[in-house]
Image 1 (tube, rainbow, N blue to C red):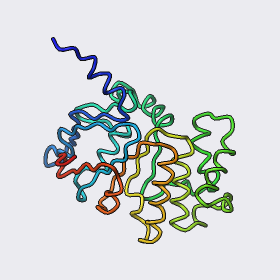
Image 2: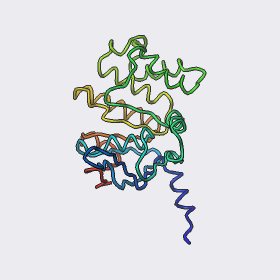
Image 3: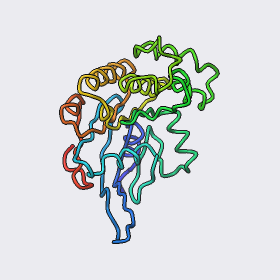
Length: 234
């Protein structure tokens, strides 16, 4: 019988390991397969783009990798933790400890200021001092003078800078970015991408970027291509 220990050790040393991942949902017309048999590994510090046409399963795959949704089959191991072995609270703990998010729609809380939005994940994690690192990273993204502004008082680009600050303030080992420039004009989007890659390089974070933009995807060290729920390249 083959010794499975080297394989298990390899999974533990990956930032992310996906094996046989599938997602199916029941519709009135029958079962719909969104993802089928997806498998790959991402090493710590890698920058990886997941590309594909609209409806190819990119965002569903991201949700499964982050433990925001549960697969119909297969496994996701995040930083050595098999997400399928955890309940919802356990997956939430892993996310708070290990994962940062940047979304197309910014996902800022409108009732909180820029500073309060960035402090929130630190407060939820129970950090004794959330304000000092939040102020520091907002200064780093160029919003040191906008700490007391609410999202409605900020431009789209400024809101995404707040979102970047919030994503990196917890010093995550893995960052998921879902179409981070989708709601921005070309010039603003380019500035946000430069900032994202600069911050990611400084922090040594593993980056998984979901995008339909081939030019943006080419900035990453590796590309995974989905087509109709299957991995066809990468």
